[in-house]
Amino acid sequence: MDLSLQIGSLRLANPLIAASGCFGYGVEYADIVDLRSLGGVAVKGLFLAEREGHPPPRIVETPSGMLNAIGLQGIGVRRFIDEQLPQLRRLGAVTIVNICGTTLDEYVELARILSDAEGVDALELNISCPNIKEGGITFGCSLTGTHDVVGAVRKVTKLPVIPKLTPNVTDVASFARAAEDAGADAVSLVNTFLAMAIDVHTRRPRLTNIVGGLSGPAIRPIAVRMVYECRNTVKLPIIGMGGIANADDVIEFMIAGANAVQVGTMNFVDPFIWNKLKDGLRCYMDTHKITRLQDIVGTVDTTSGEKAWISS
Image (tube, rainbow, N blue to C red; front, side, top):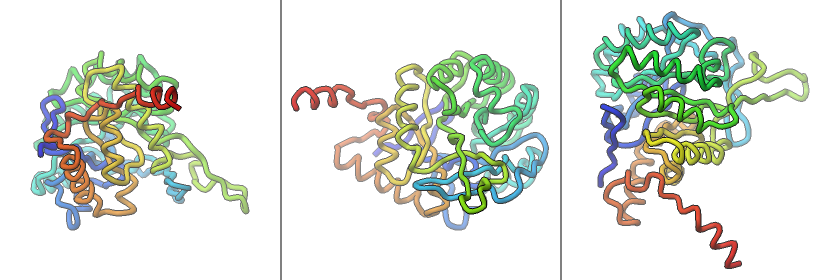
């Protein structure tokens, strides 16, 4: 059974990637997860400098999901290269570095620095975090901004460039097209949905940032729809994410058009999920007599619903 896939120059052994922001820098899970067994690890988002993030409380459980406003707390790119990257190399991880910027120049400088660092396999451009007011999301909510930041990073690196798209726009597929036109090797989607929770007894927001990003199973059907729309618009590989909790969810994303997936919130619920997902994928392939998993990508039959309606 062939679970592998290609994204630009990057070859993944399987389509399962640990999502940025939900798996630390990867090394934190090394005692319970063999990082070599994953398709890849998208590390916690990095700015040029260290960043404190928002004060707590900054995570709230919601029905079928989670609301977070971490604020992209991080150690900065230099400390990551010195402290975390050597461990990721030793552990055999395929390392996808999520980079964040408040300016176009910051994205470019991060890409330059990381392109010279041994062990970085790809760059994921975070232009979609809803939890900070500056940078990132400003690019991700503008077609021109998306094209500009992808194009600028493309010029300074040979690493695969993967912009992470926001769902907080009217037509996400047009942003995937802008990224493709600018030279992206793939797109990942979706980031979290802007949302809010209120304590009815105190009448105060449950997050100090007032609003945060909603993730978890509650958003999965919307994320699947957005992956489907992007697959009908662009030819480049798509990394889908949003509420994946089991192998059927992975397969649903792939049938909708994703070549790979990222798993985020479920890491907090079940850190042992990875082998269960791989076993489930192999079971599905065996049941349906599939030898190459990529053969199911984008194979959704959209005529079946119409036929069922007519026959009824």
